[in-house]
Length: 102
Image 1 (cartoon, one colour):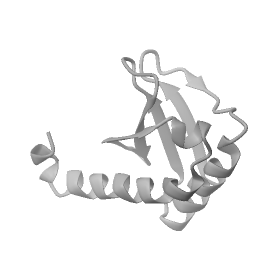
Image 2 (tube, one colour; image 1 turned 120 degrees about the vertical axis):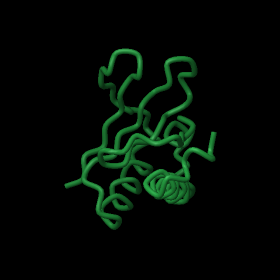
Image 3 (cartoon, rainbow, N blue to C red; image 1 turned 45 degrees about the vertical axis):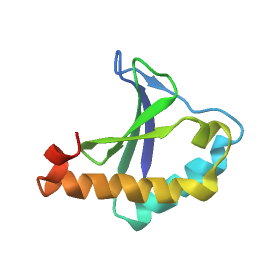
């Protein structure tokens, strides 16, 4: 079973994404993670911008963020594409190309 967490970057504390429109998006995130072999997906709230949720796939915290409106506005049709981009960032980092992404 895929575990999805939301955490605050400031203190590491966990919070819940309880917006009514988030349920469908979370289901799509869970299905995407399951298809792509990720047991854990964590979204970290930026300490300087509450609307930025930095993506962590498995153990890899990425230089890629998703806007919280993806969840609060129920943008389930775009979340898989955004996670594919995040996975691309993960692969670039693993290959050593992340130093060019600054």
